[in-house]
Length: 160
Image (cartoon, rainbow, N blue to C red; front, side, top):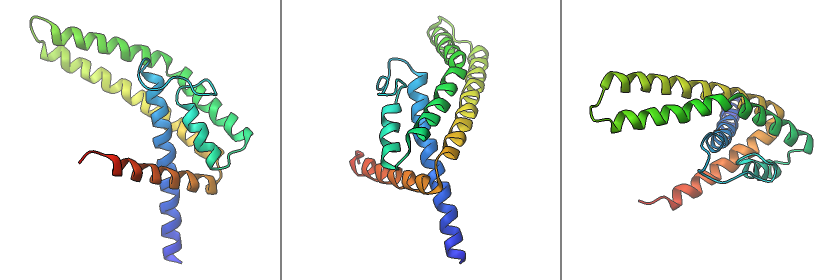
């Protein structure tokens, strides 16, 4: 009994971690234009990959639509944050290429950048929770298994 409870909890946490990893990848792709793959079949960056994963767990069209809408809203909510991130990066480059390095200005910029990342992290965490709630426990478990398999395959290909 205790073993089953522990396994169930581990499975739930693993499924949530898989969804977090998958959505986190989507967030990164959305937040950095020019890097990574372009829009997937559903029109959102990385949603093609997410779409394939959702197919593999047997997500219904309704679930796919809900999850797409969740991440589209998160992308819209974070549009100004991504613009701010680009501006902070420009400021960073200016500070590091200036004739004189200003440690106080660099530290202030680091604090701003950190706060910006926290906003993105918090919003994407909420989107991932919302998306996880759209899937059934069985689908989340299948997703976790897929992500574990992908991580194992990547680990086997990683340079040593």
